Image (cartoon, rainbow, N blue to C red; front, side, top):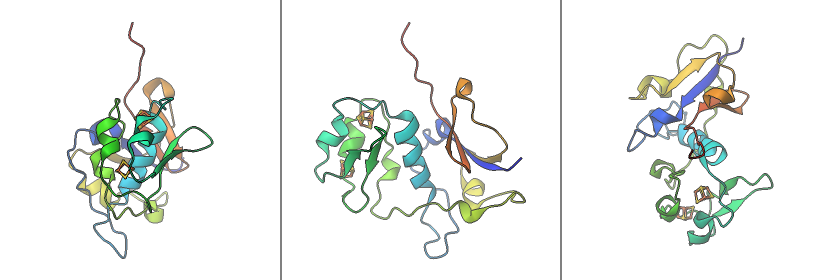
Length: 159
Ligand code: SF4
Ligand code: SF4
């Protein structure tokens, strides 16, 4: 079974600031992982508020809802003011996303033989692992793409 990157977002959220390292050729400290975290948060944590306050508060009109109802941030518009972080009532957005430089993670194009990635080795919370774990909604583990699975907080109705 092909390995995937497993990101435990519940551990990620314990960090004040992401300090993982990255081997991206041109910007070794780019922490491309952030792009994955942001995508996962908008996809799995965001409650998709009908009157999304994050969109309303953004002074740069950098946030919008896509056809699937998922919020997306335009990197070329965002001025990293973090107003959206402050106003989100669900803590969806982590301040660590909002650098001006926001490179994309290419997952180092890892293959089945890979045993470790630079981000995995340097994450102090051990939130990143390589896994054969399949998505399992009963455990709040979701597929982000064909190479990444994410464990997020559980949202449950108050009883
Ligand atoms: S951090 Fe970016 S997306 Fe968020 S409110 Fe500020 S400009 Fe808009
Ligand atoms: S305010 Fe937070 S939960 Fe609501 S749509 Fe925006 S990011 Fe999602």
